[in-house]
Length: 463
Image 1 (cartoon, helix red, strand yellow):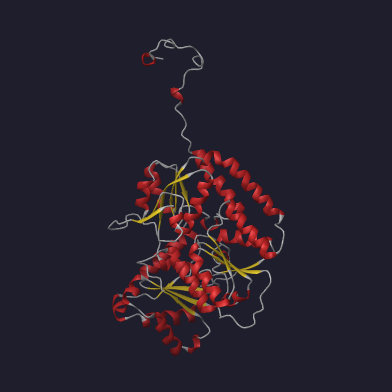
Image 2 (tube, rainbow, N blue to C red):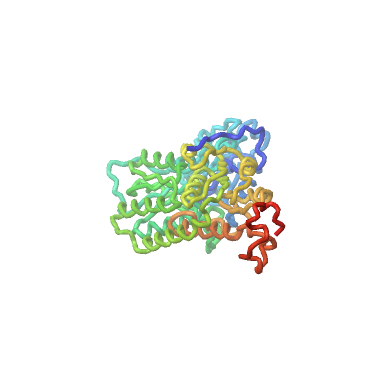
């Protein structure tokens, strides 16, 4: 059991967390033909846009209502209306997703009311869903904004359960948490394909931010789950939700459609992967394919090979709650200990985290507690702390802007878990402190009798 405390500093010194609207905007990017909009100042949107471009190294669709000082005071209806109309006419989106920011939340803009007025004034836009989610950036964090947005998409686009529903056999819904990158979602889809299961994934970043090059330019998202597919979620047989942050969305989908869900706290580690594979075998009615049996064997062998290098290592983690949970348990299963754990927002799972303390704080809090650790794990903003502490650094989470392939990182499944053992194990191997060879005895002295031996006064030895 961990003690969860919040840092009570007057200000954040080196930020670890990202804001709710950024998480909400990224969730909208997993919908095909979507245009996310931040209802706030241009600076709010520019920051998020740069962050995503640097991490994914792709063109990012993100717009703003461009609130000025005057508009903020008087109300943002005209700004929201102009943004929606301009986006509809120029980008031809299949969905417009609006996330609030701190400045408009403090003003108290009634965006749901604005949308009703826009619908009345512009009936020509009736074919475009307008989905608004409240994501003030002065509270909560990135994964909260993601989870709220997915739940809101379900409430807005999934019709209530009908009397007679024809379920599609061997089709499952997947609600991935914000800690799963496009590479993780591709891996999960491959696992489902192995059992003959079709997946509707909401949001599906693997279709929109996986780095593929489209035939034609589009100002909206390149791919992902379509609006029609979201509306059809109620015909699947079961929902798989990954991460505690997706509990509300899974419950919302169950309430609207009656489809039961399974919530996985993580898909990283041998036991977690075994649980997923066992459930998929039961859902599909199939035997576990040989390729997964082989992958499991490879993971077990990798654990045997790697535990020598992980055992006794002291780890410092600075991650979003669900990713912190997954990595913390994975490290401890390999024999390491979590000496420092810092996260961004509260979550009910934190009290069961395998460490003495979890701090809701910033990277300064992590740096203070990471002294003497063998590895620091956080996103790219932690690199300076690792340099100052002179300890190895592994980049994980978002943003990663000083390395290539961040969007293709895989941390789940047998293969993802296996490859992480190799990647981080190699970091430990490369950073073993070699003894000073100049202090070793000369070859002729090895095994020879010293003059002081047996004299009862070892301190007088000058050898």
